Length: 216
Image (cartoon, rainbow, N blue to C red; front, side, top):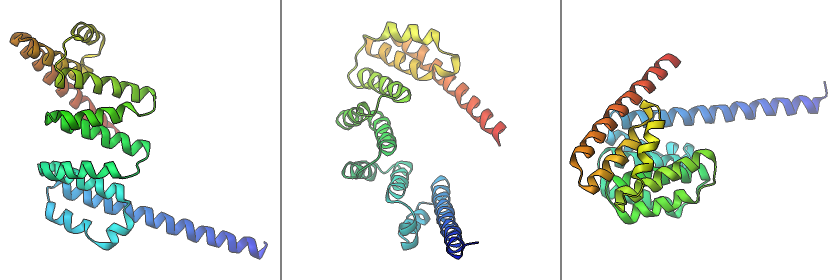
């Protein structure tokens, strides 16, 4: 075999082996950081993120995203806002932008922060028009209109849509219906659909858990 070709093959194998090791090492670090968060070991998590080897091996977005989760899990609202705001100055690809925008919208609409919720709604509306993104845009705009702007004009549409959905997928729709009835002052209907929303959320959670158990 040509000696030059042999050298190229050896180099390729070595480079692949190195890339594989780097990817494996990065995955292990990310898994360890995620595990610390899940266990609530915040001090250990923060100490690990400050290590030079971790900062060198883990992409900045991934590290900052974990820090965002740390702030949210610990209930540190000031730090959570700071972390969300920090992403505004970063160049994100579409997948990253989508993740931060949807997390931001969900967080700030829960906090009833109209200004920031509107910002992330607008960010989501600039995403490309894939089938999945269109569905996200519709849901986000509905949430903003109904939960923040207190609009009630989509009640009939949501009630009709609810009948067309499988039971386990009705939770979000029923939450919006409940919120509209709350705005209209119909307490009985509000509580009826809020209870249905909780019931169908539990049904969906069980279905997801069963599916994951079967895949193991």
